[in-house]
Length: 243
Image (cartoon, rainbow, N blue to C red):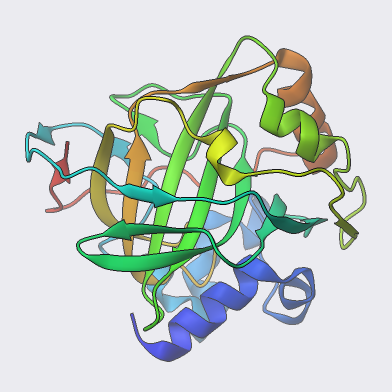
């Protein structure tokens, strides 16, 4: 991933103003996913061969090393950028993969899920977005199934902005650790951002185990979004999907 693509991608992921300033895109219609690559030269990567999300199948047993999670309680604010609801992380949380530290920047949500696991869709998916010191990205994906209310979502949703462009300082003490399943086994593949500019070279780490969220919590998110905010699955092409 080149520095320009990373900078634009991270800006889009972390700022509601950036969405308004960049070329307009949507999840349907003429500015929908099938046309993202045509909307702007900046979005050319959306037509690439290593795009996300995907249907995780044809798995290869690679005996993946555990992800070293080092998450601390600390979030700054929650925002509605019109494409998702996002919680920005305070400094100090990270993961270590391939011997590299990736610092947690933010986490956000998609409904229904973007990635499929062996063809199965989930009602909600969280993406925890990390960056290393060189600007390379690693995304931890967590699937939500309908069931008991989720304590982490309960804290975040209590201050979820209903209006696009709004940002609210979080008063609840929330740790990203609360979003993760107890079982940390995962799938891994190389992919991209799932929103324009669709920059490639992203390490995707998809948790095998799902966590629960109540029907009311899932509906609260979809009500605020007003529309599904999942990019359709992309061709896997020659990429291995490891477990």
